[in-house]
Length: 117
Length: 118
Image 1 (cartoon, chains in turn blue, cyan):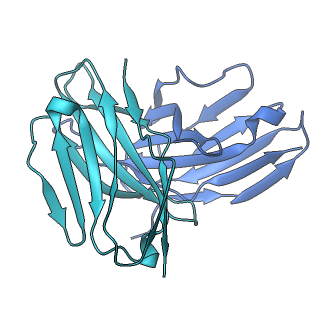
Image 2 (cartoon, rainbow over the protein chains, first blue to last red):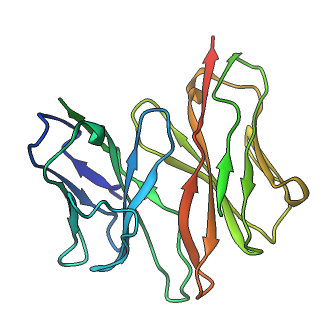
């Protein structure tokens, strides 16, 4: 079974440019997460989706970050315009919300390493 | 507030040594979950274990074992007879429960970088 797929793996842009990251979760996983991981730190949640609904976006800097998951499957995270401080690894994860309401563990993709010059 | 502390930033051992990675957590919830993830140089976080707060029984899986002690708010991870392939960054994480009783968002520690030398 394929894992969480992310693209691109690496992206280098100049500040003030826009950038987008794409994530395809594990088939059947209805919960999707975007995390940001700064160098030497643990991942920090940006946004969580249950199907197509963003149920927790409290940590998403909404002035420049946006995300969508239109059909409840794959998702796109966008930054516009990018700033130097946005350089980080952006991780996508997915999990299965069972009919009982419990959540499976989160499975992570390989991440996109963003460098803003 | 929730918090996870991994005081060991880096650990270096020689192959076949045992090594313990420490994790201390803070939470006000009585029901919560604890996790360990491994992040090899490839960057992908690999799930290792999840425990809920009501299950303090220690767990062993091959060379890996976990010691959960609510009295000290710790969830330590031991690798026995370490191997070079164990070299990675290891993250401890905490999740409280939502109103529905289901698992909430993950709060990660800063990670411990383990280097196992031949």
